[in-house]
Image (cartoon, one colour):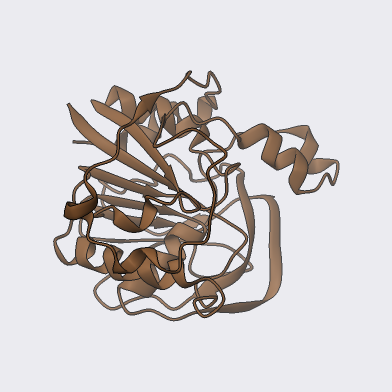
Length: 253
């Protein structure tokens, strides 16, 4: 079975409604948190599909959070091989950076449900199902479009909302995995978002609770350390209807 690896930059940033279409496309879902001691040992070229989710940190926080630099180096090796990769929010900014784009603070925060303008593109665009759909935005950083990529969507606030390189590398600044929820419209803060998005139905690399800094892990050799064991977790039933059909375009094998 094909393997899909989810990288969570914070525990509550799961894949939510992406789970069902990924599994329907024939992938087994595995997951690792960047806070896990094994994170620095994983070769990001190996998974058949790599999915990087969001987080409150920034790509330019590399001096404060050395694991970001480590992740970007390994991500660049994967992208050189055009391995299927999806980045959401921070994950999209990491793809942009690894491909040579600049990531920087934007002039305003973009938070809440807003529509995006989908660029005119052939029918194979993975975003053809999101036109005129309210999508969750939760970011203050933005990025320049890397060379060799195609802009897929923009918003009134930020021009670069989605891009791809070829058919296998896709960055989404918005959270297409999330459905509409009144808690966002009532002005609730991140704790509500965290509680709502936590479970992703994936495979955890190791039980929660083992946490330490990752600055030294880039120096370890993955082959010497060995491959970590995975375990399966319960599924998440959330399935925003607007995305059930469109998501299949993101995860074709």
